[in-house]
Length: 459
Image: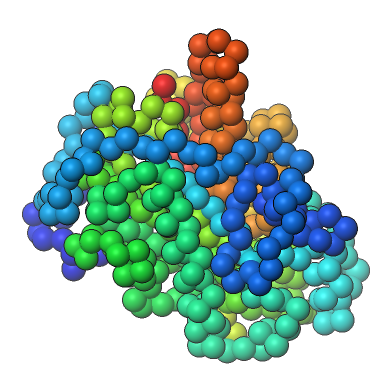
């Protein structure tokens, strides 16, 4: 975990460490080659030149913009008050740390897998291997910040790619952040910390500083950047947001993830691992707000109860990234799936047992859709019915693997479904049930590690 120490005094750092110690003790759609907007209404990145048709995706999404504004107990709080010195949160049962909003945005250029495969065929020596990978990936389409029909980018140097990254993502990360601020109804002066997350672009100053400037956030807001932690980075980002939200109760931590694999991922057409990566990775952005407040102010929100990180020591070479001359060289080995299958059940069951829970007590799973084999390894390792991962499979089908963004796209879909179920129950005159009470969000980082959080719906 990295802190922007230039913004913290020695006493603040000590308070944060104490807070951490206290804590551990206790969619657009493709139809006949045409991109359509799904009924989740995940907006498209601002670079899109045309407005897509509005035909719905056949899945139980609801409008993401219908989130009930959050009633903040600090509506009249001054800017200086929101950045008071860090103070450890007393473990009081009337306080909770929750995800109060998530707003995903898909990248502007949409292509079907069939079209992408045809585009790459002329470059690939092993055409039969390419065809087999694309036919069995369970992905229908993907979204990109860059028009991948222009293959000249595959020859671009790392420096050129990073300049393209900065230009491509700025408008979209600002739009995602603006949406989550607007749809939760908070005052932006109450944002005390910004967490930026990406594994597909390297900048300094990075997206955290860009967000503070472009959103006109307080210049006293703290900043943390999480780079190069791969698909698990959103969970790591939420963990960081959790710590800062608990350290400054009644303020908000803004987290924004953005990934542009289409710009910064190297492709060697004769490398099988690269061909697999070219089949699954895609682009996107997502913003989230985390806050610690009195529990009665957070009804209907998702509480972060606890977090875990499990380094699978037998998987050091299974997932590997390094910066090369032509962008990021990613190596995915087949043993990653088998490592997950071996390690995931003992790690998760031990973690849940600390909260007197079992796998059967988990009602929703927001598992990062890292690819067909990754989801199969989670399902096999935890012995889950396939329908438990239906949300993950659906996001993968229409968006591919958006690195850090994907797990939050899945969680947003689940949150919408919970809201829809509760509204239906209320309209029918029934009291709210606990069918979707406990949940987990889970993803995987280089190392390789399992990054996860225990979540709970606040009634």
